Image 1 (cartoon, rainbow, N blue to C red):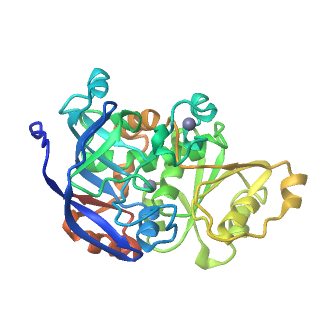
Image 2 (tube, rainbow, N blue to C red):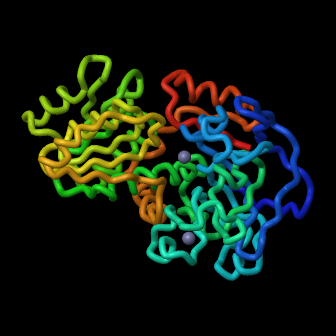
Image 3 (cartoon, helix red, strand yellow):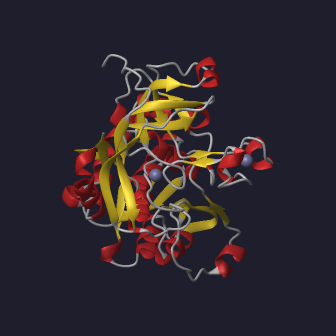
Length: 360
Ligand SMILES: [Zn+2]
Ligand SMILES: [Zn+2]
């Protein structure tokens, strides 16, 4: 473990800066200053998220980010180097090792007060205290980042920073399986075999699922098999028929779609049994034809999932004791100055890339 980093009060830092869709560079920008309820952290590891890749491409431009220049990055871990007065009183003193998450609600609206701060009624109102780091609020692909203490969580002493950087995405997976719920001995299907898909299967197993089937393609399914999951490769024909055949033609109890394609959302619905539950965590980019007759006549329960809420503290002990073996998803590490290569490796799934870690 390294010594506590000296707090830089002023000066410049290296950061990934998006300047237009598809365009980015590593450049020097001023180190941000924390407000009263904020910390300044030295960033040690950031995991590339599928959303990052889309934000770089400009898929959501105007919303995420609202304008250029912009620094993305929301799956990160690091160490507090400076903190505002209120943050210090809450124990966020220099040297505290933390992991970040993207959403911070205003804290006052009904959604926030009922615990659903990911659905804050004041989304986008920075003047009212709302933040979504790395989406419209400046993010973590930088030497330092400022976060409100509502969006950072102390990590166990033995947890390495690269693993801690996966807590955000793992907490989304946990929220994704908690929405439909897992009953003891359920048959669970993860539709999508990327990092989030494999993590939903890990979380379902940790919560008591008897069988976890991962639907996806390519090398990622090798990783799923190594993790002890059953697999269905969509290249081998209709994945709905395969899942039904694997479940005595009944269908699975629960499916979570993380792929977010027009086919995957439809397939997830068709894969569950009568009375089954389906959650959707991948953000769909196009409309899909859904069979509403099945939803009505088979009394299916459908759940939208927007990122995560209140699951960072829940997922950390399960990662720390190995019940959610998130570390097995880390395939690559790159220095921040090699971000372009890191992103290419992630996007093109080079060497079976799953979670690619960037280190400032
Ligand atoms: Zn993410
Ligand atoms: Zn709110």
